[in-house]
Image (cartoon, rainbow, N blue to C red; front, side, top):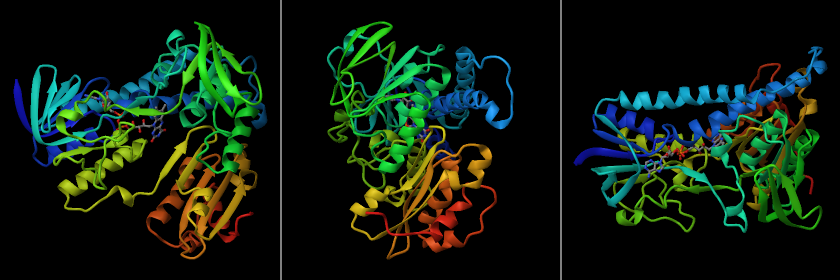
Length: 460
Ligand SMILES: Cc1cc2nc3c(=O)[nH]c(=O)nc-3n(C[C@H](O)[C@H](O)[C@H](O)COP(=O)(O)OP(=O)(O)OC[C@H]3O[C@@H](n4cnc5c(N)ncnc54)[C@H](O)[C@@H]3O)c2cc1C
């Protein structure tokens, strides 16, 4: 069977479904193709379930700290992992069914379930059905990278997807990869009761951040009893179910890290290898990311790539922003581009790290003269009242243009507080605008204008 549409959308990640809604609302006929779970990574194996689990881990942590707040809990604090999983599953399911229902309810929109593969530039096969369209939008996302490593085929390992199926806490979880995904799982499972060891080949965790941020996160995790092995490159694996050994190349510590379970958190790979892109003539880079221009158009006219698969972002908000850019340009007569957005993300450890723009290291490397304002969370009233004084805030400013270049808020509420900085940056307003704004007391954000009054050249 062959059917022609105005538009085909491949994948229902964070850009595809809303784009389908806009296109069908504009009177176009649309085909949406999903091969697995509606809503993609964020909804099923990424942001939503992990943040639901982080919330359970936080509840356990606060319950254990009850006495700090004058709350006496008689008896042991235990975590029922089956209930943690059930709660997480219910939250994910609500979101997943919401996406599917929305798509199936759209006018002029047909939903296909199956693997989509290009047969030609404007022709896509799903099973034995052939779909054609002048406009094709690729939103196929990515998956956990699985590096080729001796012994990996001999041991069982977990990824962010299979972690979602656990309904017991592993006795000893070894995590290879000390960046965002590894740290979130590491802290939550420690709080669920697992022994946790994180193995990172770089000299420090989350090494794209400034050293003092990495070091504060390292202190936070070790204070909770997580074992950290930095400067340790995992080179091979051995063992059997329940007794896995990661062999590491390192200067200090044991060359063998033993645990009962292994989580690989070493990056993401775009789902572009089995999409038939060659048949369509769509170009990818050497890592498999689809090459796009500033408007997210591929090298083939009428084919766009949105979300993680274009390598321009690796977050739900970047994928959603891709949708806004494409929809704005196609349907609203706007001229929007990716280069207009400012890098922003959060790491959902507890406390979280909210980030906007450049790090201090990046700002200095760019050759600018910078000023830096900082404050430890021990000097933030809101953090003291909440009994959560781990972390620090810092803001980096261009001394000449007076624009804010970047900021990090590692501390309670850091994922929210960062937005006042982000919005000021987006407005291209000088830092004095934010400095003069009256903020609400008591909040973490109220200290941001104060930090801007205390800017100083960085300590060299
Ligand atoms: C553990 C973890 C935690 C995360 N936490 C956060 C967070 O807190 N905040 C944040 O912003 N981001 C987070 N992310 C990243 C975020 O999940 C992704 O950036 C986001 O889901 C955007 O993905 P996407 O729109 O590119 O596509 P995806 O969500 O990956 O969806 C792609 C869809 O395409 C489908 N598909 C693929 N190939 C085909 C094909 N050939 N035919 C048909 N369908 C196909 C897939 O089945 C999938 O449903 C996290 C990621 C992970 C792994």
